[in-house]
Length: 298
Image 1 (cartoon, helix red, strand yellow):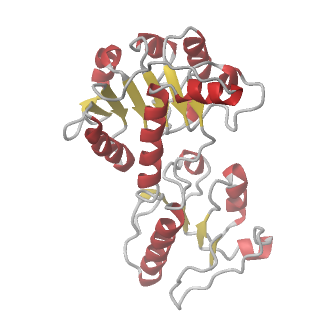
Image 2 (tube, one colour):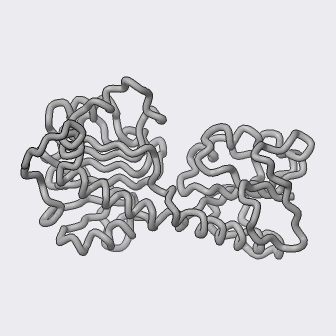
C-alpha cells in the first residue's frame, strides 16, 4: 500500500494507493502502508505517523536533506531522498540571494518602502572569490552557474574529490573569500560550522549565503556580525525556523531572509512526480531503488 500527497501520479498496477482527503490515513490504514512519501514542507507533522506504519518498507522523502528523518528512521526501513529534484530551484535562489546581498537589495527595498531615492554603490558579484561549501549535486550546479558571472569559485567538501578543496583548507582560505555559500547537510560535524570564530574571520564586507540548514550557522554570532557591519548575509534557512516575530535577525542590517523556499518553485512538482513514479516502478518490479540514504539496499 502506498501513501503520498500526490493523487495523480502513475503507479504500477500491482500496487495500491490510499485515497487522499487532505488528512493523514487512520491508524488501520497506517499499518498497511509499505511505501510512504511524506508531505512536502510539513515538518515534524509529516514524520509523526511513521511510528504507526508497522508494515513500512520505504520512505521516499520529497526533500534533499533528510537529517530529521534519519533521527526517527525505523530499523529495516529504507530511506531515499529527493536528490536532483531541488537542484535547479535551489541553485537559482542561491545565486539570486548572492546577487541581491552583494548589490544591496535589502537597503534599496527599505528605501523603496519609504519612497526614498538614494543612490548608493554596493559590492559587485563580478571579480569576487566565492566559496561553495558542499559540492553535492546542488553545490556543483551553483558552482557551474556562477562561472558566467566572472568570479573565481572554490568548492569545499569533506573528501576534497575532483577539484574541490577539503574542509581542512576552509579556515585558511576563509579570510580571502568575498562570498561563502552554504549548501551542505546538517550533521554533528557541520552544526555551527559558521561559528563566532569563523564568522569573525570572514573578510570585512563579505557575504554569507545559507541555502542549506539553519543550524549550520550560529545565529547569535551572525546577528552580532551584521549589527557591527562586518558582513552581509542572505538566508533561506534560519535557526530557529520558522523565525519568530521579534527575533533580532529580522531587524539586523544588511540581511535578506526568505522563508525556506529554495526548492519550492514551479520546477518542483514535475520533478518530484517523475522521481516518485520511477521509484514505485522499481519497488514493484524489485529493481534497485535510487537515492538511498540509509536502511537496507533494495
